[in-house]
Amino acid sequence: MKNPTVELFESYKSSLGVRTDCAAAESLGVKNQTVNNWRSRGSQAEPRLLKRMCTKLKLDPAEWILRAQMTQTPDPKNKQIWRGIAKQFGYKIALVAAPLASMLAAQLASGQSGLL
Image (cartoon, rainbow, N blue to C red; front, side, top):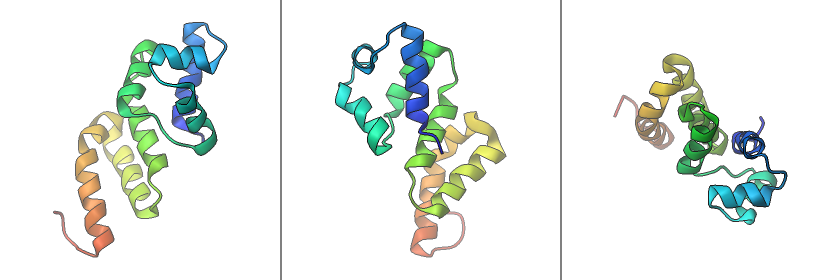
């Protein structure tokens, strides 16, 4: 799976008309090392940064925040929950449901059954 943050950052960088990660990182208010971590470690930008890039690109941030969250979740059960939310409700509602999904995932991981 492609790193959503890097994918979005590349579009953001292009929209600024700059060639270097450093210039785009500065515009975003992060250090170049942060961008290097996105690229080399697969880490994801904070939701506020994803939203800032989406605002510049006139994109819905919910999709990008959800995609970033899905890639950061190592547990397959949690990934399945995120995917299910995305499919069932669409990205806009999935963002609202994210706290519920986290609680449900914790319950599943601890062996509890039932909804909350």
